[in-house]
Length: 382
Image 1 (cartoon, rainbow, N blue to C red):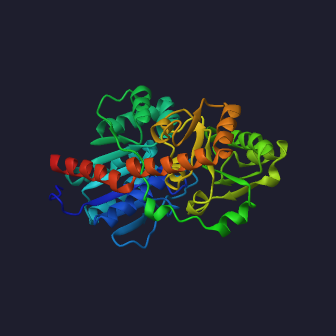
Image 2: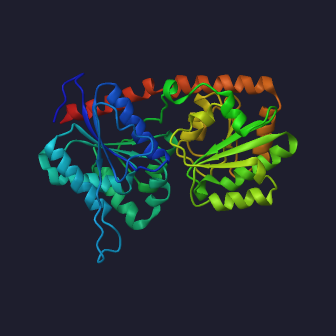
């Protein structure tokens, strides 16, 4: 189906419902597209955490996966392909856009094959661990590469991830780098004193970390950095999210003697109230394809201290919107945090620079047209 120039598009979007970066980006991209007049069909096995289902032009399609004793695992891949085929047979779309390659890319490719000539162009956005971790598995990597080489477009959220995809998966075709983005006016709420007072007393610094608490996020390092900071000045730490490393993080807080100064807030559908009142964001990850949480903090004027790895240096401008250090350099990150927190003039300067960088390079109004141009290019080629 070829879309007339400047006419609204119909996009079938596939994403995970989890609070990780790929699920957040898929939901926010769906919001931005419908707000620009397009129609989006969102496919997921549960309602995505960030998805605002009441938006006009946005439809949610649950992926119902059967459970049968003979099967070792529930056949999510086949259920996704079948759900796409059923929905697109009823209402054809101009584009299928899947987020996170495993197993969405092979499932969407299968759906396209079943649809035949009616199958729309396939766009696959890689988000990080689908390449760096799952892509290294011999069996999964082979299937993922097969699907990506047959997709009409492959995008990554950073240049660093594009390089990793070429290295790990030996991809030969072009890769479009389209960064993550943020709707600053909607996602950055004004700081509210009563929210800050709920977590920190006057004169205390408020540090923040938000993630899915997987080992790659090095949440124990977050605790260690905070403990060093707390020895030098009054401070509190907010941890937003949950995951397998949450118990270890709590135990580290006990070991470091700071557990009474650390608040575990769990998963939050809206992180903006915490971003808006924080003084500093910590992101000491072992790997980050982009660092979406860092961007969300920066957009709210919060400087970042984290690892100089993956896509983070493409987001955080070293020495202007934060400080970056080698992975595992807890002492260096603590020094960087203290340098910012102890110097109000530096903190204010970095706060302004962080917000300006987010607005200049990653505002939703600058990034969504890149996706629209890609979609229209593919539909014009049909």
